[in-house]
Amino acid sequence: MASKALTLGLRGLQFLFTLIIMALIGNMIATAVHGNHSIVNYDMFVATFGMLSLLYLIAAAFIEALAIPIVAIGLDAFNTLFYLIAGIATAAYLGVHSCSNKNYTLHNKVTNSSPDTGGRCREAQASTAFFWFAFATFAITTALSAMNGTGGVNMRGGIRRPTMSQV
Image 1 (cartoon, rainbow, N blue to C red):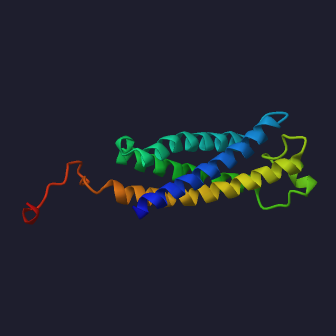
Image 2 (cartoon, one colour; image 1 turned 120 degrees about the horizontal axis):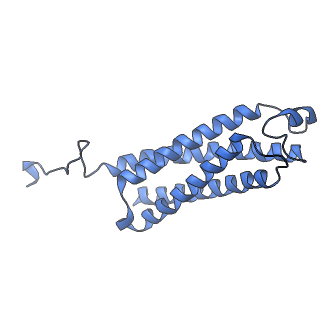
């Protein structure tokens, strides 16, 4: 029961982090004057994939009949990987600079396609931080899904049979 409460709490955090990322990246896309860098589009893909995954994962946490362990493990693993890549790539494209530095924001590939390059820079930095928070929560739920999902099935695909002492 504690595991279910922990999983639901983490799913709630994942939903919140993904919603914030989606809002930040969506605003970056909406305010772009001359297109977006591919990392911005990838970030929106990750947020959308994460949100769609969470619709199933949250429903499966409440309704046991929907819960398919291999699907939950797969979705958690893909989200962990996607959020990790988004966090690394967005941070790499941004670099470590001050968003108040006009020279930096005008020449950075992520921030230069908006009239308010400083604001876009802050949105990109904030979304990067939330990608890392979401990555951490997905890594934990991946481990929890893997531990909870293999209870009645052996790794060769068959159903675990009781031993003679259990009969």
